[in-house]
Image 1 (cartoon, helix red, strand yellow):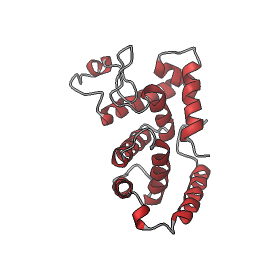
Image 2 (cartoon, helix red, strand yellow):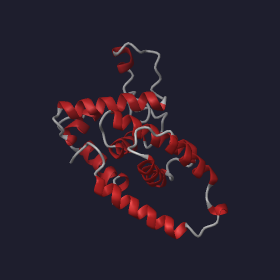
Image 3 (spheres, one colour):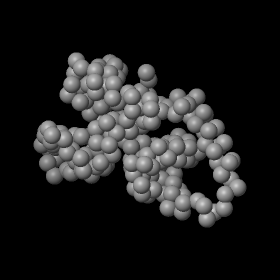
Image 4 (cartoon, one colour):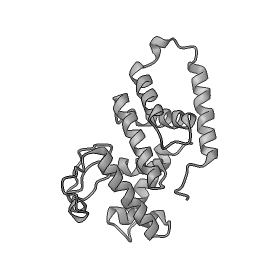
Length: 196
């Protein structure tokens, strides 16, 4: 499985699906459109510098926002998170959908999650990393900080494992040699985050 850019075919299929869905909704009055979602999408699209172009941003953000809606009800918060995930994933040369699957499994999108081992935030980062890199005042509950650490760590393990996603995910979770964690992430990725 490639962990690089989202394949164009998936993007085209997603765009066609969204256009077909939009065509059915085109007759709806403006009163039926959620104004918060519209404003959040507009803000997200115009400030999404990690996308190839505005159209790609609109398609991806709208699609992922629908998928995330039952976990994060507030449209503005949802769009901000998606934009941040996309930016940090692309920065680390990861598929944003993979990062969403890791977040789902690690914290179920609870930015204040703390594991029994003390890992924190969306991507469950261990606090010792803050001391390790000389940034003890950074806050792992801050979404930007947590995503930057998590995506960087996952990218490092992918490189270390020569692109073997299963081994990289096991390393990320601290369960190298076992497959339960990679299977959970891959199941979430296939069921909820990759376009079908």
